[in-house]
Length: 409
Image (tube, rainbow, N blue to C red; front, side, top):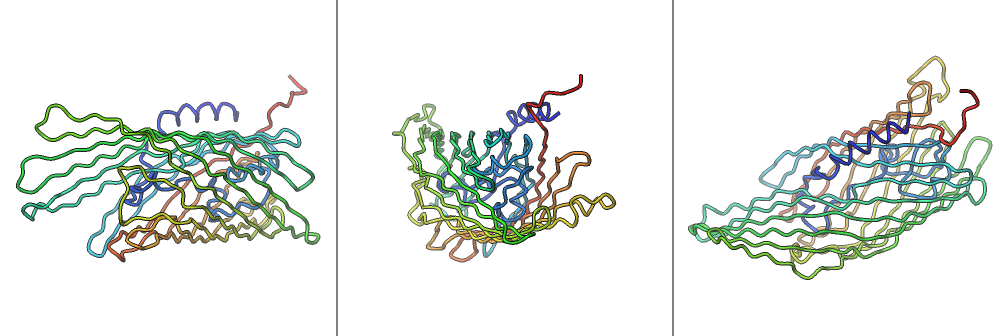
């Protein structure tokens, strides 16, 4: 059954995943866009706290987790997002529906493997600077779309009971297109510039997970992962058209090498297996070199990224025969992020809360996950934009046994 689900989902997502606009944030103008992937929904509903070696849920952020899987797992998720964008004088609403991830995890004795497709960043903005009421002033309309995606393959190994190590190789690819239209009030002409950046590169991720008993019921869970910095090739084409000129300029500016920064993540938690868990995750990332020549701004700087999160889950009674709601996994978390961007000397921060539930599918280890994330990013200070967002997410985690020969025909 799971094989049919995987094939159907892959065919569907291949048609729709890269046509989507994954963000409506004006901050996606900078660098290579907004960071999209925040983990599979099970862990995203705990603000990204993923410290336990889970046997039925796939943790894509730490490749060491693959060796802890008990069954072949297929995970897919998507989000309906709404946001209110406001300045000190104006406000606008935006909404979108996005594909978040598709991944498969396969247990192989002491080994475990995983592969999948994940959108990493998204560009999606429309900005209008209207000065048509002022003679001789320049008005501009800016629009951008696209983003960076990855396909990955990872392998993990159980060194000994409760201690796993693993590594991923990731191929990053994507396209970002930006359009700028400028016109001067009183002059019947305009200039349109279209820049297209085709992105590609490879990077690696390693990780380890360890858990140990504190007493008869309680366990301590720890996790650590490191993503190596890597080059990201940016092949750029540019087209500039002046209204009334039948021969636009088509050029190919020199290709650039962007730099994806390294990232270090560490986490720990305490809990009772299949009952409850409380944990924390810390993540730190360098500033990198992410700006193409056409989106460099004097008022923008890149800084180190940092994330601090706490979260956990609670299951009233995972093997209850009388109460379905007692088998549901209830999740929640809090997060604080510095997204690595400074505009007008103002560090852009993201503060939010997550809640969610894992709803078991009767007669299997599979489950449907739902989650809500709400929070605030940015500020109205320093002539900036504040985003108040509310995201509704749905994820599916299907589990089945593969490579097991049936005893009966």
